[in-house]
Length: 326
Image (cartoon, rainbow, N blue to C red; front, side, top):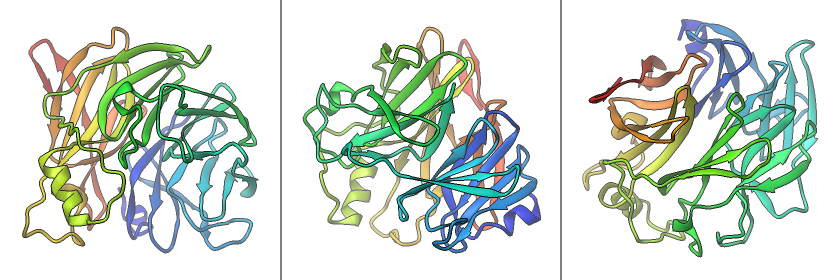
């Protein structure tokens, strides 16, 4: 990342979005001044989009964002309950209300579009996951709900867990959507065309810990860190980079003497589990020294090596018959 790009970020949110139609990346500023930084694939500054406020071209939150098929930047501002489309062709901003009346919450941090529709991970409000629950919402160009499909892995049926959030990756080229959940590594594969299941990948990578304990509410942050250290891993990202599906997960290594307030992204242990995108076979996993926040169009994982100075490194996952290595 060049100096101008680094200077545009005070505190980085933990997702980097790629523009599938152009070699651009989007970074979100988590704290004031809130906004989206757009760079090229090598981190060179292109522009900063959005500013903090409540006006027509302003935002209060930028945790959910992405690109549309016209290279525009999209932000779901949950504080203002608005989708905002930052049109980069004329610097205009269009606003659309969040869908209401369907008892769903959009949980996707990565906003992704394919063939004229948006596909977001959703959660049905007030409903404990069961065999009839939906996890994927289809939305039109004005972000109106068109359809619901997908479902929770059976492991989560009839359980209300703080780690049940759905992660989603849209693979337009292969007519596929991949989902998983924060608590488990199992991947569901759906067809975009007919919205039906294709495959359920029921493989637990060797370093992924799954606890039978269900945590409905976090009342003790320190105890939660200890739980995530001793018993439970957490899925962080799901990516597609042909010919692979990549699941990024992390294990806490919290010690009793550690400070809760000053834990950085790289104070954890990260792994990348690798699956084939045609046969869905598990190919192995690698450990990453740094936190992984995104992926480029060329399939390089984006790792942050120095949070204080916003320094990044690109990692390529290569597979051979006997070893998985970055």
